[in-house]
Amino acid sequence: MAGKPELEVVWFKRDLRVNDHGPLVEACSRARETGGWVLGFYAIETAVIRAPDYAGRHWAATREALAELRENLARIGMPLAVRDGDALELLERLRAHAAARGTRLALWSHEETGNAATYARDRAVRRWVRAHGIEWTELVQTGVVRRLSSREGWAAAWEDRMRRPTVAEPEPGSARGWSHVESGELPKAEELKLESDPCPGRQSAGEAAAQDLLGSFLAYRGSNYSREMSSPRTAADACSRLSVPLALGTISLRTVARAAWARAEELRDAREAGAGGGRFRIGSVRSFIARLHWHCHFIQKLEDEPRIETQAFLPALDALRAGDWTGEHESRLAAWVEGRTGYPLIDACIRSLRATGWINFRMRAMLMSFASYDLWLPWREPGLRLARLFTDYEPGIHWPQVQMQSGTTGINTLRMYSPLKQSLDQDPSGEFIRRWVPELAAVPDVFVHEPWRMPTVSQQAARCAVGRDYPAPVVDHKEAVRHARAKFSEIKRRAEHRAEAQAVFVRHGSRKRPGTEVVEPRWFDKAGENARREGGDQLELGV
Image (tube, rainbow, N blue to C red; front, side, top):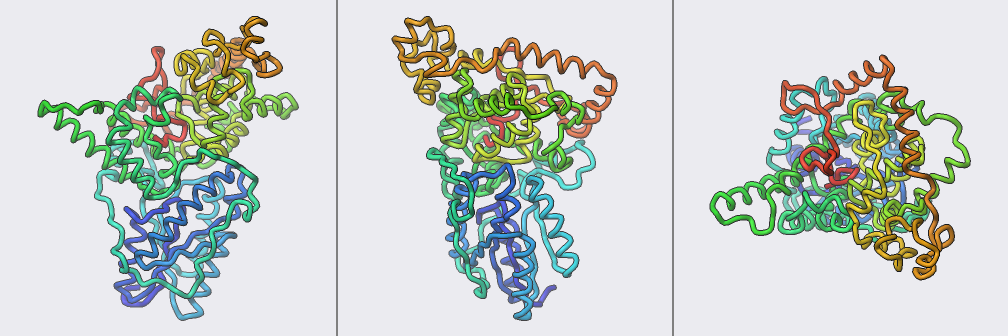
């Protein structure tokens, strides 16, 4: 290829940035060497936006990030062509377009671990490039390893990747852009025929916002991260809020990890010099770094075994909640996703999530646990509902976590959250509840966590009649948990279950250190949150 002009196409997927973007830098370098051209390409893929895990809020965030990316690429001299349709068909049109001008096409992108739609697309594109003799260079973006044969040494490999220097964006005006295609519009959700999905509190998704979030988190917002990330009252500020940028790739995981390591070293040096670190706790930075590690640990599971998006780690566990989907299932699911279960913290969290696209980890885990154990719903449908609500939806983290909270991994302790205990622990004054469940605004503190216990006179005083203004509990938590434990106990006694669980353990378990035993994270100990081993400050581990 050297010395022959080419059209170097940088295929952007979930890496919508110019900083630390290896394919972008390498493509521009190749074009300069060969006297060729560069073009950025983004496909609004029909298979992706029509998939059951996609929603309008996802496109709204992506659209915003693409607008900023287009501006940043223009500064370099590279156009960004955006088209909607089938990715493979769009790439073929681009190849034919270039060929008509006597130009070969070369394709550059990052590796991606996505959902079933993107997995099928990548396999089709691989066949297409081979058929046409096209060079497709896929570069590493995270700590996820393709074709991993063993988890031994994985943690060390992750750290090695993250500690490598980041790649600076190309110099302004340094790219020779291909001008023979129109850039294309960035359609609105309704133009793509996506359902209305209002999310008034959605956070900004662009590259500049991501850098600002990282800076403010490490400077002051994350000073008490490890202690404040569990409560929905404090987590929105105490957490980094980098989950959306990481999911869209408007900031690289390596950029975040290196900045966090640098901050930890700064705090350590200050402490050793006797200057202290002010209010900022070095343990908070270390806890945050651990979650960046877990981010890739969970995505690696889906990379290694794509079927877990739709099947339980242990398929036999899918049979626990199997059966015909009934009207009762539908009614319970609707109450859960609309925030009218009669459990105040559950309802406050789901309503907050619907309005903002984000909720902290412990509350996400509680929501999924409630759907799985209290409502006894098969994990896939609640998982899809959450996927569509999470603006930071990351398939590789989402589905292993959904299964973990539903008890279908076969290797994790069952975590059956008590909505009442979590409410008392994480929102003792009812501040968060009253904000998102205004029906309970005037309910006294003593009843705000258990409004069904209010005497009639108290309901009248608070103008909140249980069963009319606010629903009675849709299920009895203690009875539901008793039923769930009995069902799981029955299947776990089987010898074949233990053998299958061990196989999952060996394939997907993390390693403490290379050469040591396989371990899974203990998400919560009896005293509460185990900050070192919990594995993420939210279900998407978006930290």
